[in-house]
Each structure stands twice: as structure tokens, then as C-alpha cells.
Image (cartoon, rainbow, N blue to C red; front, top):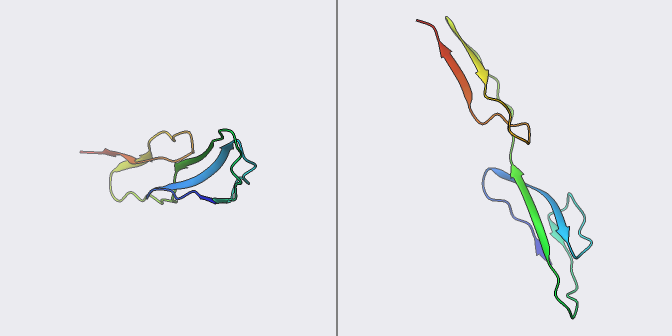
Length: 80
């Protein structure tokens, strides 16, 4: 059995390779063939909801999203 375990800040995305692993499931039962075989577990950066509030003059807006639609850090624009 293969078990896909993501690192902190990541989530399991999909399997690819020689076996018929079900995408969306973090476990994959395999029977090793006599010849070589491989399987790859793919992970993506986790996205968490974030609500931004501005108080006083200035603005807050997210950086451009990455390929998973996550904005890693908010951009701030202070006003003097």
C-alpha cells in the first residue's frame, strides 16, 4: 500500500504512474509486477480563506494568485 502524506502547508492532489490509483484518495493498493513500475503522488500548496480589513487611510489587496488560486501574502499600500 502506498500512502500519500503531504508536508505542512500542502494537500494531496493526484496519483500518476503504472498503477490504477484513485485520484482524490491518499492511499493506493498496489501489487508489484515482476518488471519495474512507478507511481507518483502530486501535492499542491494548501489554500486557506483570508478576509482582509483596512482601517484608516490606505488599502489592502492580495498579490496575484499562484497556479492553485492562492494569494500567498497580502499587499499593503500605506497612505501618509
